[in-house]
Length: 156
Image (cartoon, rainbow, N blue to C red; front, top):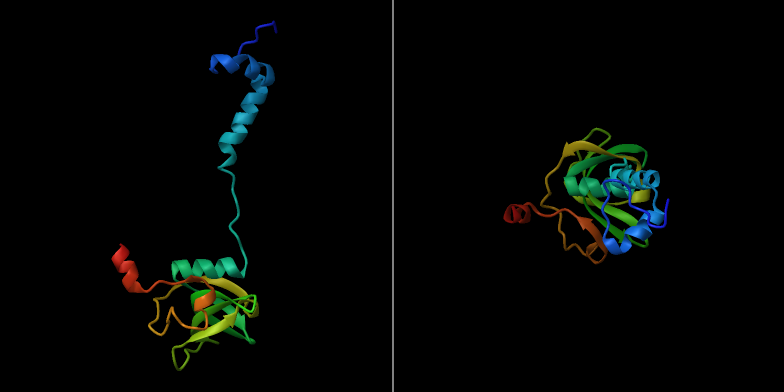
């Protein structure tokens, strides 16, 4: 290498920085670095897991969740995720409790920590008319909620 180093073949730099770049980056290092940068975005990343991301996905995709609650199995249609007493809670319509449909449709409040073995299932649900987004139980601390069907139709 002489007093006037040249950039690697096929690489063009502005004239004022050609010497500096050529001195600092050798061709093998440059190729390794560029391949790292180019393929970094293609790395497989795992999706967040746990109860909160599962419930958020269920609310956004309008999918039910299955869980263990008070010793029984429940299928819930979560309508809202909110904070209460520094803990996450959901307002959900109970679809099934131990394989039986409840007598009346109502939005129940469930502490997220109390739902065991929580998992997303591919059972879809519609926003139930008994859900009131302005309910005083969760209006002040709502993190995520379903949108009524009318609003979806207007925005489409």
